[in-house]
Length: 273
Image 1 (spheres, helix red, strand yellow):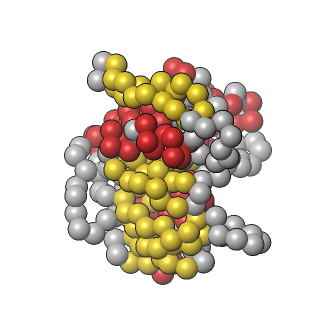
Image 2 (cartoon, helix red, strand yellow):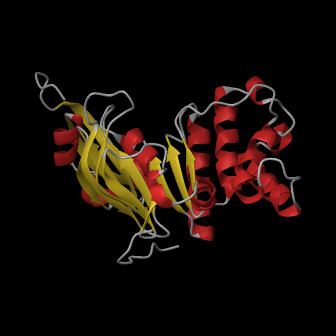
């Protein structure tokens, strides 16, 4: 699905300043960014650049010190938590799971915004859980307890929970973390399919710039808590950006239509990022 270039984004941050709880300084400063309907937007940047913090603010988990986050033009702070969760699903980098839950029970948690935590699962809830488990390749492990899974299997179970939520916008913090190379590509392919077939908007934090170039319609580059650039992958991922933001000298090549980054070494060995 081609993302819609509408005047009003689906989700938008306007000049937000973000500070961690009990923090003494802003880690994100004066950041404005919009998420278009039907697009995949990748947040990239060095460690400590503010990617996860920005994603938390977009997902309503961190209130801006100043500025605001809007969903369809309405302040997120004014929406009820359940109403927001029916439209926006967020997967943090290190989610916590209560001990004893099976994989299917964890994935069913993604249906809570639609049915309540105490209601008996409906047919549509069971169908959503089954489809999500098939999508991440965990259908055969549905009765296993989550704590017995490998790191990669556990990560895929959490992704299945978010998919079962069937929100119109997914916010995913490093969804390929703890996955091997094959699983990383399978997850990216799955997310691309969800975006294409269902029109789901997706914002994801990625460390691998080649992965970002592969899946994203646009890339937002963060550097030292500020937005350095947001544009198409080929416009953003260029030698100048890699030098300025990541401090490396690199060449950009194309292999079978895909962007490849060839790092030659530090741009300036004496420079501190």
